[in-house]
Length: 367
Image (cartoon, rainbow, N blue to C red; front, side, top):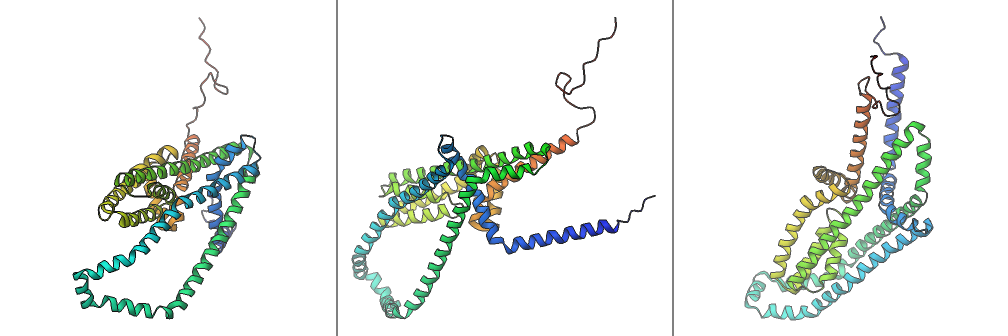
């Protein structure tokens, strides 16, 4: 009777496997910033891949197709800036010109004078103005920190875009090389799984664009009905920032709310707050699950859970990549289940007799 005690070789194998896995996890922890940038680059490459393929199928060299996509993105961002920044700057300048008149109106108000005499508002503002020069050094330090942070973000952005460029250029050859390392019987299977993940990521990008278009349209209709100026630029701002999960739509909603404060307070402001809150609930709980169910083939409940979990773990980046990751996990689970079902197929079950490889049909009994 064989002994149930594991051999020394088995124990050593398990021990060194655990040590290797621990070392690998520690190495990934040390390189977590690089791994994060690489994950972002892979996600962007999968997102921009269909656009690059669109131009490449029209006999445009792939390098030129990638550059065309980059230029189109840059022109889109620059166009959004041209639509949004000048109107907002004009409103701020108009507000600064009207500020003295607002102050005169406040001073002429008996109620404001009573509060001013009681709480010395004007005196405190004057003291703060006198102390302003002493705080310039602190402001300069904060500005330097912000400048360094922005420079670091720009460097990371250039690094990511460079990695994305080479992934879009040589990603297919790299994937082919990786698949050729597998056994021939497994290559077609894993190519199919990778293709499903690629299509799910592209579908997520398409769904995100659809939802952002809905947000921009809702903003334009609301502002146009309220008679708020700059409805088109603000709608474009909403659609653009709505691409960023969790915080993008909130930032755009605050900007639109500030414009309504300047133009038509309190009517337009209260109506906009109501519309924005209702639409956000509708988008988060109805539109996103339905759209992503059709474009990514992820159940609505999984969409909500994935976005909440990704945002909780990694913030904006986690929420941005949560749905493609959830789709990839779902694809792997479905594939593993199909393989398991195939492995557990009972003996004697195979293709029908009329298909190749099936059992021959029984011969008729003799008369």
